[in-house]
Length: 348
Image (cartoon, rainbow, N blue to C red):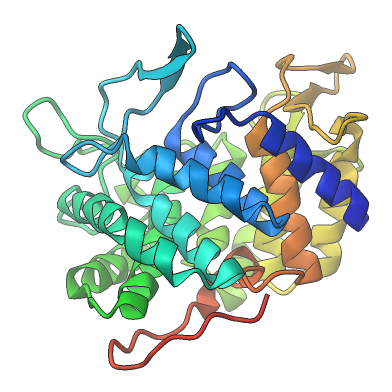
C-alpha cells in the first residue's frame, strides 16, 4: 500500500495544478470538466488541503448556469477558463452532491455546506427533470430542452450515488427533497433490473464496475457483477483495461475498480489492484493516465489530476483515514434521511 508520505506527495501534486482562482483542471493549463474537478477536490480534502478543495467547489459554483448545469468542458483562454461546450450533461450536473457530502464528512464544515447547498439543489433538480419514464436519466438535454433518450450506464450509476448524497445533504440542512428520493428509487430499480434502458457500452470497463461503485448493486448481485467480466478486463500485475479489446490499462479505472471491490467486501483484491497500477506513478507523485502494454508505452502522454485523485480516494477507502472513506468504500451505507435529526459528521 502507499505510505502516508506518498499520498501526501500526490495530493500536493494535485494542489500544484490548481489555479489561484480555484480552477482545478486535468493538469496545469489543461482542460477542465466539472466531474473530474470534483473528483480532484475530494482528493484534496483527503489530504487535508481543505481550503484548496473549497476553492475548487466555489469556482464551480460561480460558473453554474441558471438551469443547474455546467459546461461539459472549459479551456484556458488568455489565462482564464472559458466554456467550450454548450452541452447540458446530467453527470456533470449531479456530481457536486457527492463532492460536498464528502467534504462534510471530512471537515464537518457546515458553513461550506450551507453556502454551496443551493448549487447542489439546482444541479439535482435538473437531474430529476432529465429522468426518463423507465427510471434511467438521459445523458444530456436536447436543444428543445427535453432529455435525450440515450442513457449511459456509468453516468447513471454515478448519478444514483449523487442523488443519495444529495438526500443526505438535504437532511443535514433541514430541507428534505422527496423528489430526489423517488428519483433515486426509480433509478436504482432501472440499474438493477433494466439493462435495456442503457446504451450498450459493455466494451468499457466503467460500465462493468460502476453499478457496484455507485451502490446500486450490493451483496450477491455485486459479487456476480464483478465476477462476470473479471477475466475480460483485469490484466494481472498491471491493472485493468479501459476498453475490453484494447491492450491499454488505465490508472483511474483500476483504482475505481478497487473502490468497487472495497464496497463489495473484498479489500485484499482492492489492494492488489492499487498495487498493480503503481507502474504509472511518477517521481513527483503524479500518475500517468495509462499504459499500452503491448508495446510498453504510456498513453496518452499526460498526467492527470483525476487519475491521481482516484489513487488517493482508493487509499483512503482501504485505510479509513478520513471520515469520508466510506463514501466510496461502502456506498450502500449512506445514512438514512431524517430531516428532524441533526446530523453529526463522522470523526475525521
